[in-house]
Amino acid sequence: MPAQVTNYKCPSCTGPLHFVGASGKLECEYCGSSYDVAEIEALYAEKEKSAAEAQQQAEEKAAKEAEAVKDEGDWDVSGLSEDWGADGKGMKTYSCPSCGAELICDESTAATSCPYCDSPTVVPGQFSGALKPDLIIPFKLSKKDAVAALKSHYKGKPFLPSSFSGGNRVEEVKGIYVPFWMFDGTARGSARYEATRSRTYRRGNEEVTETDHYDVFRAGHLSFEKVPVDASSKMPDDYMDSIEPFDYAELKSFSTAFLPGFLADKYDVTVEQSRDRADERCKHTLSAALQDSVTGYETCVPLNEDLGLERGKVHYALMPVWMLNTKWNGKDYLFAMNGQTGRLVGDLPMSWGKFWATFAAIAVPLSILGTFIATHLL
Image 1 (cartoon, rainbow, N blue to C red):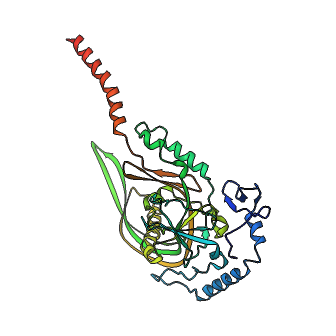
Image 2 (image 1 turned 90 degrees about the horizontal axis):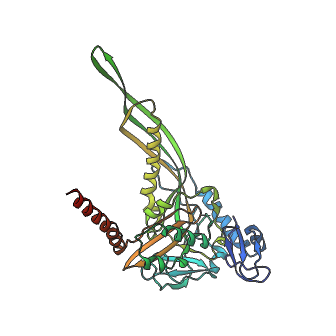
Image 3 (image 1 turned 90 degrees about the vertical axis):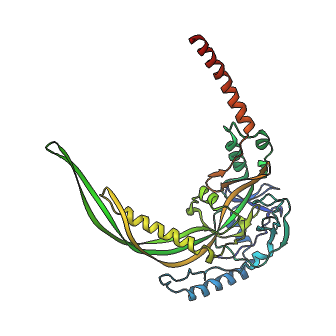
């Protein structure tokens, strides 16, 4: 795939173009023109020629080096590339001195605060050496959708502090692409189980239960494509697990045309550091599939398993997330929303003042009623 330059400008007025998920097009906020991504990429084809050739050479080299991955071998990272070509010239970075987040974006995107810790100080820098993603799921939901979802999240929460819901700056929600490693491979293995079937019948005045025990063996393999592992230490894993899954049908080859207006987190968890989690997800899925194939029994208890992996390609992908980090009474509260599906997760503080006021409003009338009933009963 040809590499893409990031500073796309409107052919009509030269204003910056931004990708809008709702329309799936690049739109100009100055003159209102809109264009298909492919249409704009075609206009920049000549500028991207050298970058495309470099990318093609890298892919050909990776293809020549690729070999069949042996059982328990390393994950194959030969397809990952650091060659941004012409794209790198239009990129810039931000660093957060508070939490250490390193963010990348196009030249037209400004970061006024850190999306992870809400630090108002982010230090701009020059873009340099980082792996280039090869896959991306573009934002489908807009900032307006994210703000509406957050406001809806607050409704029906009677004990939510008024100062929190009224001053949490929901309009400052930020769109950020979270980095993921995606693993291809095959899990092979076998497992042995003890299974039982029981039947109950009457014999005379007695109720008899007979239980048959079976030795069950299963073996098989599962091929995996793009098993995801979060590659950012700043994004809590439980948050990402809560807003998954993403619809892989909308995965696209990476293009910087999708970046304008959004931030992208640089991975700080390496493939090697993600290896155990990827292995565990693959093996766990095979283990569950093998056991699920044992049907027709009342109980099924695993006795032993022998599972192995044929590790394949690793992909570097970016996933869309709307985030808001806000503080209340000195504590951080993080909200995250899947920028593709709208699934939302976030903790809310509790106003004990409101709680006890509500409790008193209920308890006092009940106490008076109880006293009235007791008096008349006496």
